[in-house]
Length: 364
Image (cartoon, rainbow, N blue to C red; front, side):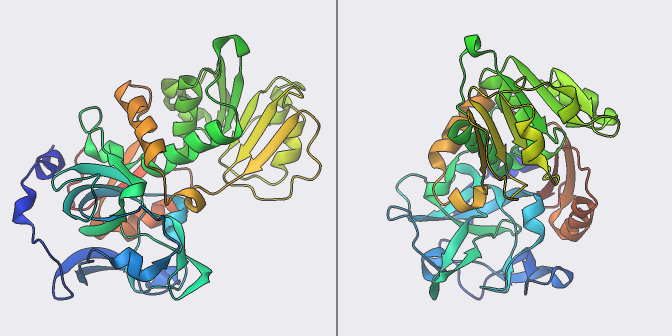
């Protein structure tokens, strides 16, 4: 594709150093008010050292790399921000070409990927947490501890852009909180709530890759084929039946909640196994109350754990290369169309991911 050709071009044509006089296209938040977000054709290009200047308590061994961004994507968390370090470009997921580096890990010309939407401490006041961000722009600065070489030989660049945040979220949910990977003899049943969204799409595939015997998911009937194509073996139309009525007590080994419906923990306890059942939510942070014996219930935000994620990304790379992880549901927008993509995201019911092509090439 055109984007792959751009990614392969010589980085030597890029200026070694950037200054406040250099300008780039970006989708910018001047404040925390979403109605004020705007596309800017002449926003200042970031410089190496930016993150260490602006943020505190970064990993001791983290070095910065400057990227020529190829593409990003829209996650629900990308459509809002705090009021600190503004104005600045939004955007978390990134695939880009290294054009300048302080890192011993990556060299100029490497194509890398990651999630740069970390929650981090504000440099002027470490008691305040702010968002890192910066991927909705022609150039971005990131930490080498949150990047890995992108598996561009295995998936198109635009498809890779839809994966970092949702894949990291699901990988951590399953391996940190749900005991994955599992042995075939464990006969695990995994239930993914919201299987056709970005995180749900990754969760279905990773549950299968990690050894689940059965992967059930909730979605609308219109998305049954999509979810089945990802590896779901049991499809529940949430319009016509409640998932907690489908299963009996103890039938479900793991629940991954990407929806956040009120009452989810209680419903989960009615179907999870009392012999090591795990529930993990990335969307529901209500107090689960007393968790029944033999079960666990966890909630977490990937952005809180994402300043150091290179090891997890490298493991995700292996899954992509093995053909066990992809993002076939893509809607592609140019960088100048980011506001339109945000409107689509706000409408809900997105299948797969909304991808932002920074050079405005929307062909897949």
